[in-house]
Length: 281
Image 1 (cartoon, rainbow, N blue to C red):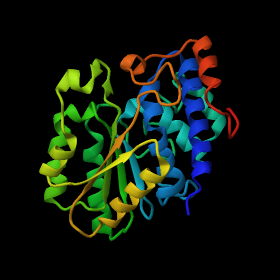
Image 2: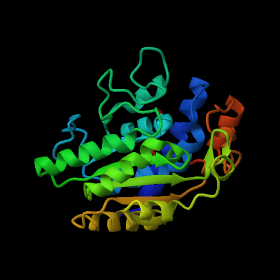
Image 3: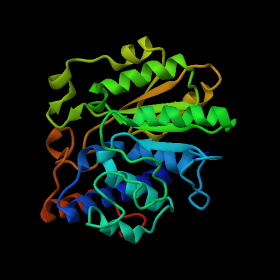
Image 4: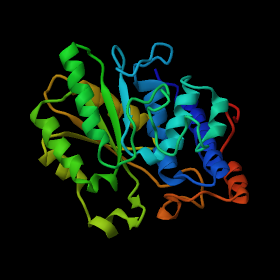
């Protein structure tokens, strides 16, 4: 049974990591990283079958995760470090020239836990579908997970992939959308209109689950339902309702922190709101 309090502690530390990393680098994307933190924490610390000690890039024998919204790299690196894929101390090298923790995840230097370079929005879902089909061919019963942003889903490749996955019955795929309703130019509605993503994904032939992305019990229940859908021949999309910048009051609910680093003073203010639970890097 999941220890919700432990998940909350991990999430708090990850949020601290994210804000400190972006502040130290003087660049990065804190808003979406903070809104997706609870989703990624639930995945890596409760849901996924994975082991950093035996990880290989082909993903055989384990679940796989793709971060399609690659600009959320600070979240990715913190989660991987806290899950044992890389030294926690390496988080201090975020966005440093020549380091492994680049602004968008890269496979150039063989970073454990990263299956595919990402950052060109809209591509991760296609990559995840390919891996899921590969697992079917290998008779590997594990799942493939992929996290997309709601603004990212304005990309045409997302819907090409959606059609393909439904047609080819990729039911070992669990896609997730961080529905924080913010993107670089404003709210999703102001950029693309009032989009009913639940209706659209269903129209494309997907199983759709909705959940509160900041409620661990609701999130874990959504993941359980998604996994139970395997065998139906239908891919799953979980629509997680979230808050941009979650956990830091002056970052919440606005696109202003999509790609902006806090000042050192603002970072200190954020740290007062986020409990240090696992030790800062």
